Amino acid sequence: MLYNSTRDSSVKVSSAQAITQGISVDGGLFVPEEIPSLTLDEIKSIGEMKYADRAAFVFSKFLTDFSDAEIHYCTDNAYSTKNFETESIAEIAHLFDGTYMLELWHGPTCAFKDMALQILPYFLTTSAKKINLDKKIVILVATSGDTGKAALEGFKDVEGTSILVFYPEDGVSPMQKRQMKTQEGSNVGVCALNGNFDDCQNGVKAIFTDNDVKAQLESSGMMFSSANSINWGRLVPQIVYYISAYAELARDGEINLGDKINIVVPTGNFGNILAAYYAKHMGVPVNKLICASNINNVLTDFINTGVYDRNRQFYATVSPSMDILISSNLERLLYLMTGRNDAVIRDWFGKLASEGKYEVTDDVKAQLKDEFCAGFCNDDETKAAIHSVYEKYSYTCDTHTAVAVKVYNDYKAATGDTTKTIIASTASPYKFSAAVLEAVQNGKSDLDEYAMIDKLAELSKMPVPAALADLKNKPERFSDVISKEEQKQYVLRTLGI
Ligand SMILES: *Cc1c(COP(=O)(O)O)cnc(C)c1O
Image (cartoon, rainbow, N blue to C red; front, side, top):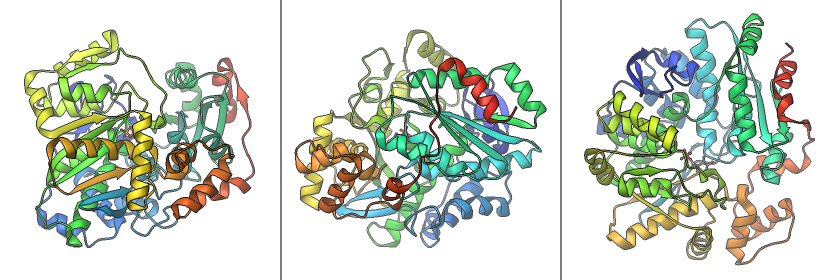
């Protein structure tokens, strides 16, 4: 299996190259040259395996340059109870009649990004070895909260790597800041920047492409790589849990093998729902993929009209990980829907860069309508969804998952569709305790972060994830705050160059 670039179909690289490189030199994203298919019998057999083996089975179809031993080295290290609080890794909660919550947040940072960032370091180091890149891999991350912590937990103490994360001093939640400042591991660094997220991001991009820095790294036996969600190594682990969930529901007699299901995904960068699209096209029987957005509803408009227009007001919401106006992974979907037409993709994404807007063809509009449904909701509706799920089912969901619940309820009311449905639950409610507690008890709380967690535990009767409960007692290891002008020197100094 080779990988093409969405902006140049003549590019053909191995998965190891795609993963170490992250993004193609032409600015395109790597996609496998075909979508491997699974038979229903294979899907059935997946239901009998433990999660790490399910993942290995799926990876063997995509990472054909990896040996079985290499794949199992990656999956066994990533998907174990060392890192996840449940044996099943991706737990399914049976809630409503025919509706299932796929809880993807039992990993070390309590959000679904752990599903990919726990394994990415193993993919990266294995890939580097395979293509004889005998260098230490340095990961630089700019984060607005969730990705930075998940990447730190993934890369901590992984041999042959080091990681440095920058976050905006006044741009992350108190809990997110505390999670990063107390990070453990001998190869990690965390630093706050006086500036906003864009300053962090621009600084990191400038350092990545600085030839002077590159040369200095080179001569010290190091290289930069990226852990952000355009890396194929972050997308492929997400395909696994949709196949796994379908196989498990069939195994447990909740559905018959071959029955179609709907999948609802709270969406930002379009990575998670694209993984569901891949699972469908590999052979998981899917009726509709339902794309749920918060009030930053650029994707709802796109799926409904075929016009992508990022020229609009940006809102900060209670589901901050979906506050995104440029959904990078959409490029992969459109590449597939245009029959892998790199010229068209260059044109559309050129327009996105220059005008912030493009319109797809009628053929692609028809495919979007056929495969997807889309909806959005505002913060009040999100909180109302949390409240009603809590009242009806004694189940507490986070703000991102609640957006999916609301959009799904709207879909059901509009269509009368009774197809059994999986909702991707992307974060622990404890990660966004202030908004969740407000929703559950119908009123704001003036408790501090930890007291809110205790109060939420009392009301929800759900155990507090150990990783969040422990935070209170952990010493802060990182307290550097720098200006953006100092960022480059800071990186070099931290790497000992
Ligand atoms: C990142 C994130 C999302 C959005 O996922 P995408 O792959 O960017 O669409 C949704 N919910 C939570 C909790 C997240 O951290």
